[in-house]
Image (spheres, rainbow, N blue to C red):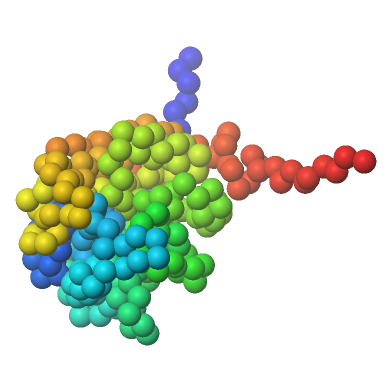
Length: 311
């Protein structure tokens, strides 16, 4: 007698894409690259595309901005001014262009940008969400920039930690956690508690340990993880950004590693190394529910252990 198989056709399915792309440190030329990747994803029938951290604005790896403890240089201040000029307001005219592209391509966009605050001169490392029907729907500011990133980016807060249900993806709940935010257990738990099943991770971390982190999160949260990393060679860095204060000359500044992982920790695509490119996968959202049969870290598997006092 054959074993009955579950009818997975009842589960929502969708196609997603992850773009591995280098920023040009120029708003207009980077937008042109973004649009090309969106067009390519649309040809593959993708309903969602994720771009890396700091795609618009750029990631100034190895630059010190002329700082030491208790000291800043005029040259570093001028460099920060240049960096700030390459940031965008959110929402703003560039977001409007992306919203139009989202509508025509019928694709939900998650994109890492350097945001210039409208209220101040502070910059934020931000992920924006753009819906093909509703346009710009929200943003997430990185709550804790890592190490020297705190020289150039402000800290976000809990006011931008929402999740989104794309109009073109019934059943999908989308979030974005930026780079080393993914090492913050309570932040991950927050998104798990919102029943996220499309967990996006825009990043520039191209170390060999990053895929392990992505697999862990997928397995822990029983969620699909879409990690988009930049791939950038020294030649992609224009002008003064090409030569940093320490004289680094390695060709691959950011080595890539974009990937898509299933709720059981299986790598569906990637990690992609050594090139820019696009990866796509078809997802069955029912896998998230089936995975929580034996592990639901905010439900039946959660145990809040009280501190025991010794008398």
